[in-house]
Image 1 (cartoon, each protein chain N blue to C red):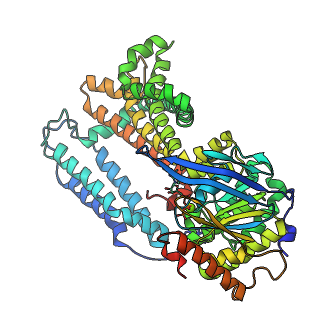
Image 2 (cartoon, rainbow over the protein chains, first blue to last red; image 1 turned 120 degrees about the horizontal axis):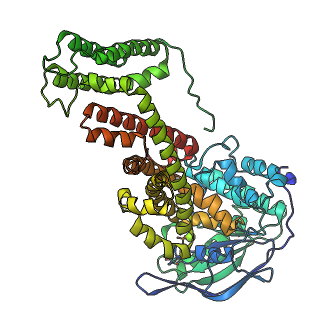
Image 3 (tube, chains in turn yellow, red; image 1 turned 180 degrees about the vertical axis):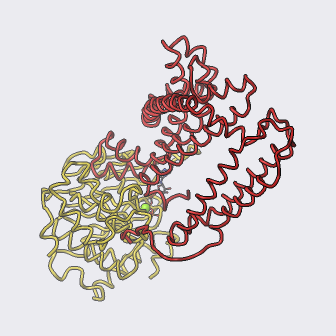
Amino acid sequence: MVAAKLTKQREGMGNITARDIGKEFIRPDGKRTIALSNLNVDIKAGEFICLIGPSGCGKSTFLRLIAGLSKPTFGEIRLDNQLIKGPGYERGLVFQDSTLFPWLNIYDNIAYGLKIRRVFKQHKQDVNEFIRLVGLAGFEKAYPHQLSGGMAQRASLARALVSNPKILLLDEPLGALDAFTRMNMQDEILRIWKERDTTMLMVTHDVDEAIYLSDRVFVMTPRPAKIEEIIEVNSGRGENRGRQRDSGDFLRLRSKILQILDFTGKTPPPEYYL
Amino acid sequence: MAEKIKNEQKLSFGFNFRSAIPIGALIITLLTEILIPNNQEAKYRELTNFRSVLFFALIISVILFTITLFYKNFRSKYSHKGWFIGGFILFFNILNVVTVKFLLLPQIYFPSLNRVLNVYIEDRQFLLKCMGSSFSLLIEGLIFGTVVGVFTGILVGWSLNWNYWLYPIIRILGPIPSSTWIPLALVLFPTPRWAAVFLIAFGVWFQITILTSSGIQSVKKSYFEVSSTMGATNLQNLFHIAIPDALPSIFLGFFNATCSSFVALMAAEMLGVKAGIGWYINWQKEMISYPNVYAGLVIIAVFCYLFITLQFKVRDKLLGWQKGVIKW
Ligand SMILES: Nc1ncnc2c1ncn2[C@@H]1O[C@H](COP(=O)(O)OP(=O)(O)OP(=O)(O)O)[C@@H](O)[C@H]1O
Ligand SMILES: [Mg+2]
């Protein structure tokens, strides 16, 4: 078992409470874009949440607010009752597009956060484990431009995981992977989640992926951007979890989510018609 | 793959006719030199320096050609340059013919190659002293200018307050040509030598400041964001993100600065120094001694070329990661 070797130093917390969140952007022409309005979200520590919704409905915006990279125009977000004021390593974020540092090789990219916080020595082993875990062993010395899109995304994932955050914010982390690697990575993410009790908030466009992975699926709709419905999908962390892709329940949940997306978005993007 | 591809010198026989082009060009030039007599009216027509250099070059080119027969890597590099080297030699052949053989150009302004080469023999000692003097002036100017330039570049690129106050001033001061500063530099600095170092350092400072600050300002915002979500402080973002990402731009600034410092050298050596290549050229120009002027110019050109080549080598070592990102 790989994860047994991984260091567990984090207190098992990671509750997110978001109250009446609103986010507005001022466009260059002076008009306002309302990206989010009146959003109320409660995420319990250790939960796995998937966020699903049409393009442009504010999913990335919400993740950035939790990460502390931008501030909400209205309302407040708390992590374990602490107001989020700025970014911090206890809230890891995997960006929608790869943001590996081109001047560092893969190993140094993944070890970056640990080195910055001067805890690299204690966690050296974790770096190697995560490199192996995401299937990049042998590419430690390669530079980001030498990797494929999927490999770069896996490296980004490893880089966020190695810091062992309380909550991991994932913005379509598996979007660039082929179906097979994608399913493998889903299982790895599930396994890491079970091992480490990290709270997970993951944006995805893949309804199956959302049902397969999460405890609850938040279905978002645009204009006004809000969470239309919260769907309980899984519970517990038994061995059975995540192994029922063709069960009746699975298909029922899937058609339910698709229905919500279909009825609420006026012209849902084609990716939801499966 | 992460595997290293080593540039091993493989022993393998082979022949590429392009490797022989320099030999051919040298033989043609040598025959021209020997078979056509120097013009009766040419000054110093008895000099044979060019001929000696050609003989020497011929021996070298034969040796190089022999090496290409055995080593694959060297063969491909050398043969690639074959046409260029050949053309270069033939250019000198034409110069030789036009000047000393047929006197097609006025002798005062276009002295024969023999006479230019003769400067290196007669003024050997003095030229060496000049080179040493110029070299130390240049290096001091470059070091001062670079250190201060990187520092102000980072301030202007990183801090909005510094940017607000300094950037307009830099924009105004920077483009002023070095020589304009001569009177002020002489007043401000205790010795002319310091003033000369300042003139060189000033141009270097401007180039490096501009490119350092623009390099830092154009770092992708998302790099800072990822770094922050991994726990980096503002200062760590500067040293671990902004500066490494701006390094290619800083290097470009250094390259520009090197080129402009050679121009500034001429101005700087007008300030009461008693030796230096720039000073030598100015002096000989006033004496209307053009063979010496050309000899000095060649030294500067070779010097500059070597310096920039060295710089590129260092850059390739430091910025290997860039190779796949941009074309160079
Ligand atoms: N920095 C910004 N400035 C102005 N408008 C913005 C900014 N960031 C996001 N927006 C707007 O906010 C809305 C939501 O954007 P967001 O990136 O959160 O969408 P998303 O749900 O992540 O979409 P996708 O699935 O395509 O990634 C969009 O209308 C977008 O134009
Ligand atoms: Mg997005």
